[in-house]
Length: 249
Image (cartoon, rainbow, N blue to C red):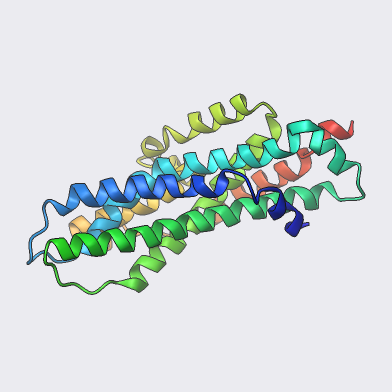
């Protein structure tokens, strides 16, 4: 079933799409920060990463994943493809989960693209400013892995909304409406119940730790982890339950 799902999107515009946000945010972020670099500058790599990832985590990554969810859903609704699929002896739940795995794959690929582009752009910025500093690969990989993991609950909710609201304009509009206040919610105690701000809050904590040179604002797993698991489970269960239900009636 997974193989079939990947074949469906093989020639779609999703693959080129996942390059747009990383290129925009990395190029603009590093370009704006590198003007302040001097040969004596220290901790340039963490500074460049946080500068690039802040807007990316709060807005560009969620917005690009909204488009991915809608595009994957649209391939089933076009030409009554969902009816043809459900006419086969396949389980609706497994079909919905297979599509969600495809979405997570694109999430992973986009963050991987972000990582690669960041390394290339960062190396160019370091060389042009005559800064000699080793690449902190472990730090960068760990940050990207955390970015991926904290984004999963939001993607599950995006997919659930896309399944519930069949018209793309409704699902896109509602998801964007939920993404926009993410940075505001992240500054309140309600952030743990708002998956759309998880990734941004993670980078915000890294920014506070970097600027104050302390660990007081470090991202805490508790109470984040239980809340994130609950939100993820509810969103995924809802998407599995609602997927294709209307067509089966």
